[in-house]
Length: 288
Ligand SMILES: NC(=O)c1ccc[n+]([C@@H]2O[C@H](COP(=O)([O-])OP(=O)(O)OC[C@H]3O[C@@H](n4cnc5c(N)ncnc54)[C@H](OP(=O)(O)O)[C@@H]3O)[C@@H](O)[C@H]2O)c1
Image 1 (cartoon, rainbow, N blue to C red):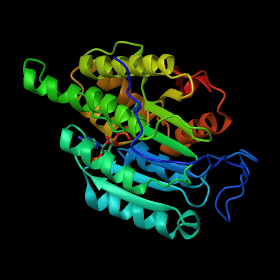
Image 2: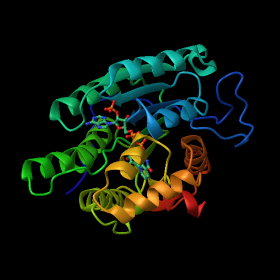
Image 3: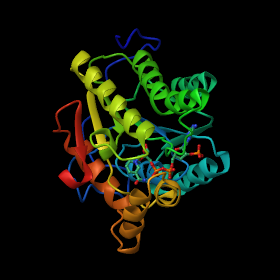
């Protein structure tokens, strides 16, 4: 398998000068560094970690950047777009679009690709795709259609969306391209009753390792965000098939050991800003 990269966009070079982010947002944490005039595509942006990633990245891009937010829930995406529009980044010219669609369907991928191409401009210095959308593993394993549908969304759609974005934005001088895979400890460690979740995350990590090998100019990161206090965690501690797993997640919750999306996202942002990780690496929240 090779990720195809023919161009569908004409473009000219416009190298980033790496000055500060949006007015009112001096780069106090990562002084002098930011993500450039970026086209950011964030899947699963309606809630949980993806929503936090969208808000945090909006503080780290230059005016003239564009965001494409993807999830199924239109009202949540609308609310986030309005919030970003009213923020300093929005007032400084951040363009925010959303696509309310099911990424498990080909039609969903087509809608996202179209929106991304419409949001693109020749001034974009950095294309950043955050493959964050995911589903917890409450699946009946005896039903092939359910298994296929799970893997279609959690694995196939991530591969296809990434390939489509890379095809739309081939390598050119002055264009930085970063692909983030939101991974999990489950990509490395088996968790009883989570066969599909673990298999899906392991497959995704390997997909992005292959991509990093194939295209050395790309920056590819698999980031495991830690046990996040989100809807997915709630489902994990109430519906996981394995009683021991449910108990351990419940204990983490009651002891206050879950990680906030903000804390985890800060570490992801730090990795992206410093840009010194090995492309294709799997980096865990607890490694940083
Ligand atoms: N929570 C954790 O403890 C944890 C730990 C390690 C890794 N992760 C990973 O972190 C990522 C984010 O997880 P989270 O905890 O933030 O999950 P979450 O709160 O359940 O959010 C999942 C996001 O994915 C979107 N989504 C789900 N199905 C979709 C579909 N078919 N098409 C398009 N969008 C879809 C959801 O939006 P809609 O419902 O509006 O579509 C939502 O925005 C996932 O990849 C997850 O595997 C989470």
